[in-house]
Picture 1 (cartoon, rainbow, N blue to C red):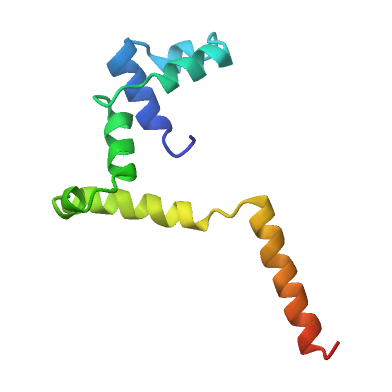
Picture 2 (cartoon, rainbow, N blue to C red):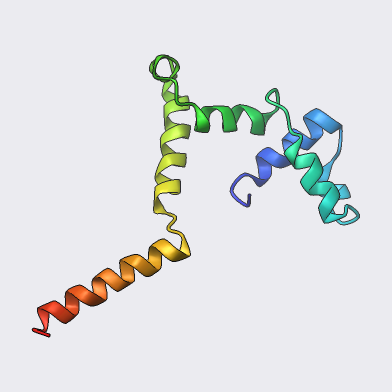
Length: 104
């Protein structure tokens, strides 16, 4: 969400006419979440989310260079995230490898 803050701000302005930078201090978290989840496809954030989540091969072939850059950057960032349980598995595997290398 931090990386997309500018998109969120411009999307709130576009869709709701809310100047988020002025109203965020007074807005309840629940209201913010509800408004954010209702952001439509015709907003800056909506368009970026559509690019990031596209899976249709024909559509992907028609992507512009900029659309490919946006999608690839998102996919790389997403691939770098490892969940807690997955990280535990990776670390356990490394531990076992070191134990085997030590001859135990």
